[in-house]
Length: 207
Length: 183
Length: 223
Ligand code: SF4
Image (spheres, helix red, strand yellow):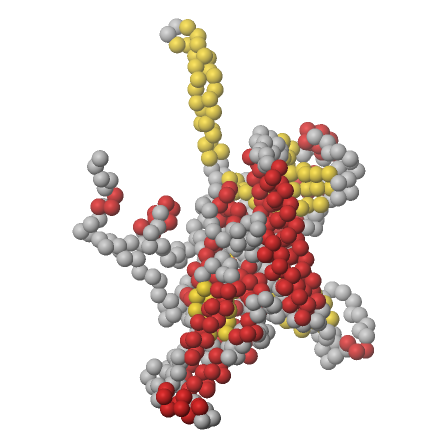
């Protein structure tokens, strides 16, 4: 809710039949209510993503029913499944092709950290090594309820974004990059193994 | 990326007479298209390098490995039971049948006999998996044939019902029978 | 039609392919799946025999896989007659036999015509070098094509006569053979805060040195 309007005055006016809102509220309400995800599945978690979009769980209730086949029309990338090293460059490329504002949900243990396959030679240990992630959902696979929860978290995040000021949303800040370098296939690993601008390995504190 | 695109071998076959509606400016020329690994019509991550002559696919080279999760290498370091959850994730529409196949081979390797009750439970769970697999197959197949969306909704409605039955046998079964990794 | 025993198959194959060297590798485990080791020179001829022989007709190659055998020493106890204290006695003596490393390709064969199987055949490379070679059986069983490519990708066995030997699962620029036992994956792992076992050993290599404490964590408390 916007801070500029006095809540008492606002409800008073509302009782009189006058609806007062701010540009920011209107804008965020519009964007939050029609998040179109990219139709994009990688592994087992993608099936749960489909189950969430299908009957019974019905993601459409939250405005996310239109899965776009093209990244040019999508707002949200749900990284659902194991990101292999062979696939990671294409995911970064897809992310770069999405127009701003764009959001990423990292669904499942694999997309967060490599999950059960973390020890493997061909599995990327978390998509956040190359692109920024907004919401993480743990689970293997997360239940559809968990994806719905993540979706609502994302809506909450969008609701709180500012249009102006120093703490305005990232996509309104021209200095923030919206595209990230695509890793190259190297002789032993992806090059670079992580993007240092995005990813910082967790520090192990041993005192 | 460009380095991984394989040039398809030159044509060796005779040019074929195309039906009139299929002739195009590209006739006689092959257009190489890399289709996938992210393409709305591929189920899963799979890439095809196709050589098109107008509308006709002349040659196709599959490129896979986009979901190569090195089960084998991980299996070298886990116990027999520890490998079990990975077999769920081989084919996630048929997870419990995969579990069964793996269990059978370990039992054969170690000479273990299973009790009769376990055999019954296995058959029931495998059948439930099969039902939900076929339900999804019909949904996806009809979707691919042009009935976008609706058959999939019906299929997934039935699938959810099957999961509710499966939960009586194994706790929290949806895709995978294992949500935890025993080691 | 029931399948002949491996000894019978071996005998008939050796009769049909003169000069072929076939060994039976026994499997004494509960599964009892013994296999035939065929020599590389006559592998194609033996495979063709297995495929076209009217009693066998193994026309379906369901699975091809690789095995990496590291160099190992085989310890054997042998009874040796020795003269001890003037009299002859039987003494146990352990002999050590060094077996050099090699790579293996294993083919699982079934017959669709006769509905029998499984016959397992294997081939061995001479060593574990980067260009270890084996003949490709792709001309006999088409289904071996992708699987031989996979073995080339993961184990680094080069198949002579394979029509399209490229990497299949890993990208083309990749240079290692990840399924070999001595493969070390790139160290790009974030270590857990509470590591144990193998993960602990690897995590230790990444710890920053703590001179005032170093070695302290290895001291076990006195009972
Ligand atoms: S987190 Fe689990 S369910 Fe999801 S893709 Fe990874 S293995 Fe599959």
